[in-house]
Length: 101
Image 1 (cartoon, rainbow, N blue to C red):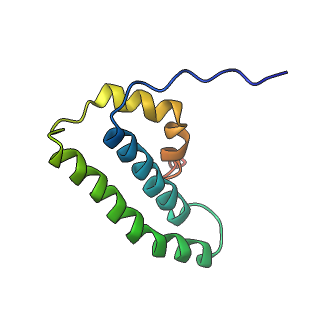
Image 2 (cartoon, rainbow, N blue to C red):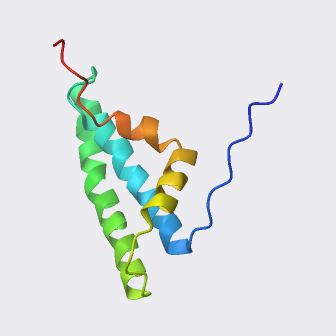
């Protein structure tokens, strides 16, 4: 049996797609660094080292958008793209879980 088909990605410019990809790269690394998750420090250290390069790539994606005249982020469209690319689960790894209260 085949897995259910994902909804299609919304129409994005190349620069918007690059922005989403680089943003998720940074999110994934921040999730690995998050101290509320169990794991060893070496894993967090490696993620922190890679974070600088990924942050530069994210900045470059935004710079390209700005230089091309794409001065506005279309939040609803980009949010749909993030949902299709499992962004909700990936960004949840950054959050601090609720306390016992």
